[in-house]
Image (tube, rainbow, N blue to C red; front, side, top):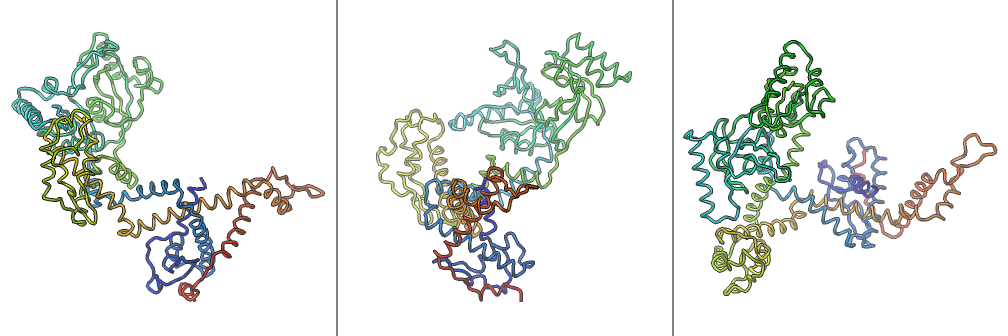
Length: 584
């Protein structure tokens, strides 16, 4: 906890770019601590991170200067003791650098467009059905074309009204959730969805599918859409204003025939009785208690927990959303039985600043964020003059000579390919080289994947991914040079870690572990803590005020230590520069 506290408090001291009044000599020397030089700009940036310079009194600035010097002394001592060379320290700092670097390793313009797109899509819910024709990402060109043409042929049959979309889904779709199946473990029938995915919004489904669904008009069927699963035909049934949550109450009658839109005679009799009593003015909650077979919601007069639209079937959601608060539906079927719904409340999507921030965070973790990364890499290739040797002839050579066994087992040595040694450097960028040997080491990771497509496509895809990773890693090494604010963030965290470690060693832990010192210090300050009402005067015991004594002892040790540091390191303050920020 103290570690986090120290790192966060470092904002009290660290440098960050901020507006400085032109009258101040930002680069003027203000302090020298040993060989370390601190400018007036660094001091002011540190001060203004938590204070308003315009409101500062001279005594505030003088006090802050003393605190700032104490901080710098501790960091200086930490570096002298090589605290920042420890393996654990380096690993934590590197993890922070990688985390902080992510915002610089994207194309911000593309990222903003993706975020805006997601926000716009969240304003609506789509209801769609689909037909899947499976096609592995590594399928051969012939198999890929076969899957595409099959999907195209199914689409023609639907457009020509040979089949309804649902019937075509049942007949052709290779999505296993479409058709009814018998669960082998229970022997019970599990009803398929006939291709109906219900209502969904941004992030509910994979990005290429989502994009196609949102770009297809209501009532239309998309052309075949490629995803990692194969080719999809998407039929958009409905598009409604965005709904976050739906709250309804229900009277539920269990009936397996409901999955087929049918009902038993007993169910029909119950539903007719319920509807008759509702017309006669019976309270919905009363009928819940009398008829509903959903024991969980019965305790709350049938009210269900609020649910998002994608958690219920499309018909259930559509029926609910057609009701106004207090209105009651006709019976609607599901795979479980029949439901009579009473609308309680619809919670629309609210895209306030907090929600938009959540969308931005979610985009950064979603595969769609790779679009932004790829765009950045394209720009970096131009910036760093990326070139492939001989226009990438090495890729054609490798594709023509890669053993077919490479894709079926993991015992192939690509470096043993005859003639491969004539390729050394295969690409260059900045002052770096990408060698064939390094790429082959990377490529070997993908042995035995069962890839059946064209070797040139496989190798080109892997080479592009390898180069992208290499260029991104190189860009990380350039961030402190290119982005002063990133350099300041890294320095802030680095110095905060030093501050925590050295404070722990010299003050916090030392005070807690020094039992003799605690007792002695208690004797010095115990007169400040008399027992109330005692006569003659008695003092509170060490056990009663131990936490207070330890805190006071830590403050004492800190002052003694800072005093020693001021003797150890030569401190020079340029009072002339400091006077320029003091009020006359």
